[in-house]
Length: 325
Image (cartoon, rainbow, N blue to C red; front, top):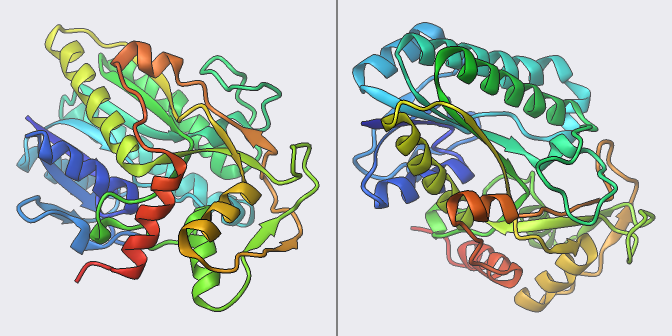
């Protein structure tokens, strides 16, 4: 069978493609390349350039490649931009998902993995966020991810699709220089960009109710994220082969909180550069602390993160100092 990976030319998506192809899975990538790079797609993996809003395009791709499973990563993901452009985010992230699910149902696709986010939780008042923690997103981006989960589960129940929603926490690092994060949506590349320009890193608020006043997050290596996708894809294969549907909702994190200031200090240790930050106003939609419980994914899939925070920073920095040729 073939797995369709939307957003497979992006930072996370390309790692998922590599993990699945290395495991012997047949893969086809759909990406409009608005935030992706065709060079990230491994040789021999078909790349279909187009948008998930284009139903005829999706119908053709699913039919021609014999797709029987979908991993949906294509989405807009900048929290601040979503506050400024909520209609655009709902169109891209929710309407696009609706169109894709419609095509999947028509093509009798029985496996569907949805890329969700810890942003669905908002500001949880708990030490560790479990999958049962109430979802109260603070931004339109988080709202689109929560609405996406609802839609995926509803479609799965109605049409006999085995589904999984993976709630990523804060992704960092790289498995190879050619797959590095070239965007500036995540903390580590944002700090690197400032350092490259000879500017101090920015800290968006230092008056949060945390030990050092800066936001606390659960950081996870992108290679661990990719391995989680492979594990859940295999689980959905088992369910589909048994004629079972059902849904899984799983946190993908390490269960360890690290503050923004601690991350910046560690970047200074790895790079040897002065990382004394400038503190500026808070960004809208940023919760104070979000740290995952990873008990459910460990119990369900036997999955556990293998990389620590230093290795995330070191791999990202190495790919920047010695980029792929």
